[in-house]
Image 1 (cartoon, rainbow, N blue to C red):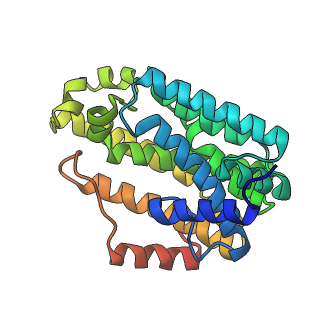
Image 2: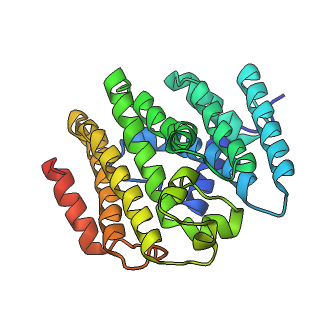
Length: 285
């Protein structure tokens, strides 16, 4: 017998958003009000899985097993259309009401499990494969929620989301290795630019490291721009939201180009956000 109401389950997810809000389009006023609640549930699902992968004192094997259990519980919730876990209870309702493809949620879980097992990536294709699971499902879910999931839109969304994931990596290159022993820069490109893992762990900001990161940033910008047409094709507040996301990514890469130390994390100012809004309103890049 159900021990919680659906309303309570949704409220639980909203509380997670209030406690953990970050760079995820959960509370943006550009989003249609009717979609903020389902998006908060999707966020809660991903947030909890991310915590299983990164937070606490568990070792990697224990984290992997915890994520496996999380996935098993999710599968059971989908089958039963109910779960004692309020996140799963609310999410099954969101999936049903909006006809969301469940494989996108399993893709997200695959990425979190990869983080417990894979600490290095041999090539850029391997990094993009990670982005396929870790970032692209988010954009695809938004398109499905807005019923804008055409083949072209999905392709452009993948380019934007993968680029955003890469840009996030480039802001945290020291933190990733220090806290989780992860390097998301391809190993073959470290060799190409004569950079070692010691550069990341000890913050060695020499010419080789700077050239390596400039190469990464330029490529991420090109990937972002290759999908930027999505912001022009979508109308209304959703199109505005996508254009703001694109502008935010490009603003960060612009700052990454200019910083003298690749280990400094760029910050967007109020002026930057005004410029982003200006371009988003005018539909310019």
